Length: 449
Image 1 (tube, rainbow, N blue to C red):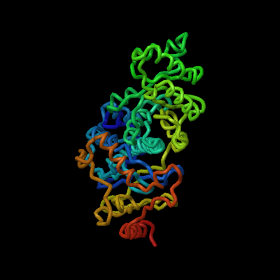
Image 2 (cartoon, rainbow, N blue to C red):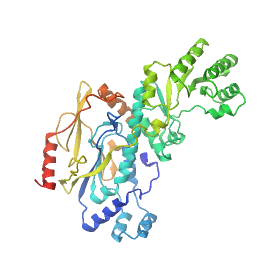
Image 3 (cartoon, rainbow, N blue to C red):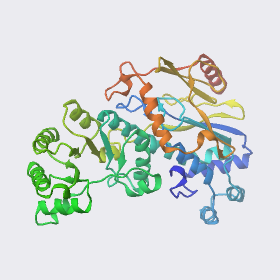
Image 4 (tube, helix red, strand yellow):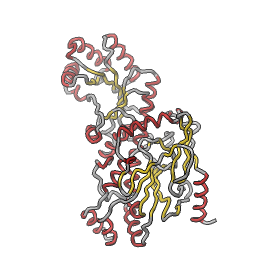
């Protein structure tokens, strides 16, 4: 959905969004509401999340319209009023959005975005807003860990075949780019988002030939500078055949890399590097794949394996260790009054908010969640990205700017936070005195005591 490029229908909503909207309309509850999107707690394996999906959300809000066909379907359900149908036909999102820019590290309970709009409008968009922030943030947060683990070596997204659906694979490629992934094998994502494309060959190409050497020769002739997959039969024999062809064909046999896709990648990389270097082929790089994730990459890097790049597929494409977030979209203000939920372990900070990032000597030392308009030390992170249903300059889509921002923001975090291991102590997030006092006052009002 990023930039409105995916075609989502207006009826992408949970049923209770529509029933509540009808209730609001019937009761005249159309005052200004504030809904806050945040993650209650980080997954065990995450020290931070990388906020992502804002462009998708803004594109959705800009284009949200209900067709006659949509209204006819709702009418067929026999549960909604003519008042709702008329409202839907005329629907245009007229609210504002305050959000963290894409590529901003975010922590538990911090607002990722806040929707400020008439209550029925803000309620209606809950499912789509959550969905897009969730999938993009999950993927960006996994992808950035692979980038961190690789320590400036190339990382390519190979996940499209096992990602959970076409749309998810496109969203993932978009989020991975922001996270710092260097390219994708997903051609449609390359077309839509202008992402660098990368790919090698499959074992089937080699198997389709009677001789592995002939397969290498033909592929290199068609695609000079390509990467050859050398482990269809025996990895080191495959490397030796590359060397033989380079000797026989000279400048007519141009390849950029070999790819290892099975076995002990570290050992095979060392042996392959030795063979290539001895043959005077030091310019040929080594690329590795095969069920890699950030931990596998980190182990190979720590062992100083001579691997120049990594292809990461399923583990990154489905964020296998943390496939979902405890993300919520909660009413925090209505008609000028703070609102909150006080259920055990599911409380909500009331009112509009701001996040202040404290820094010393260019390094983040902690965050403070404060009230909107409060003057506190630190860099204010939430920005006005949409006003009256239209993007502001801070809401304009710029994928490469988001990628640069992510890299800059990550460089400001303490090294323990960007580590793959659990941060000790965790990154500190506190609540301002003013917000604490406001929360206590709202709590007293809504529950008494």
